[in-house]
Amino acid sequence: MSFERWGAPVALGDRRVLHPGPLRWLRALGWMVLVGFLCVLSFGVPYSTLDHVLPDTGPIDVASNLVCAVIALGVYTGLVWFGEARAPSELALKAALPGLFIGLVIGVLMFASVMGIMAAFGLYDIVWSGPAPAWKAIGGSIESGVLEELLLRAVILRLVWRAFGPWIAFAASAVLFGAGHIGNPNATVFAAVCIAVEAGVMLAAFYALTGRLWVSIGVHAAWNFTQGYIFGAAVSGTGFGPAIAHSTARPGVAEYLTGGAFGPEASLPGLLVGTVVGVVVLWMAWKAGRFAKVA
Image (cartoon, rainbow, N blue to C red):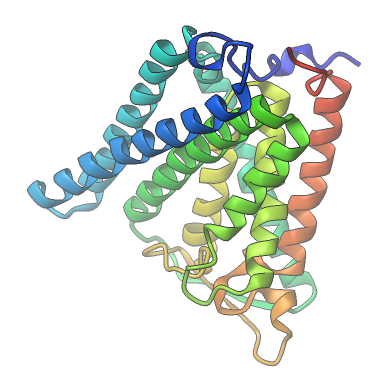
């Protein structure tokens, strides 16, 4: 079976800042810190500015998130051009629409599977409440999908991979992804571990398989949207705005089975679904030769 149609190996960068030679690992880590900081800044500053000057309406919030996402992706592109002397193939435009579409479908199906397991075993009550504005959920999904994937996968995973190889990169990016949620409302150590394994590894695996960021962005955004808007469950301990359903853990059921107030991401079913998908995609990436030694 050929896996070439899924994309190409991750482009780690091997020129200018990342040229071969002494202390490349240190240069890669320093570059990672700088690029990550500027990408976060390039999203956060424009968004804060627009939030203060524009009316607080749903469509405008979505437009603001889209504009800031484009700015952050543009800043990353410019930095890679300048610092690594290459076009960022991880953001190849010709792969954007098919990659996003595939990712969105996978993300919806994955989280629907989690809630299907919850309902089948009587762990959650799901009450459908009817149509509701989706603007806040769309905006939040764009922000988390683009900014977090840009930072955790294109910057941290890629440049730690450049410095120390793929397995340390996978572990480091997953741990940082989980740790980044520990300050959320109702977070626990178990919740952070679930996020690291079910999402951190799985989203990195899609990036490794395709060499593009688009599928990971789509999966991340669709998972959050399905969780917060379609099922009305807590998203990493926070509300996601109006929803067409309201889902709550049944009283008396152990938190590790439901995720408790943090939401289904911190549940055993969530961990199971995310881990299974992650392992399958990792296997596909390995079969495609994506982890072959890179000079």
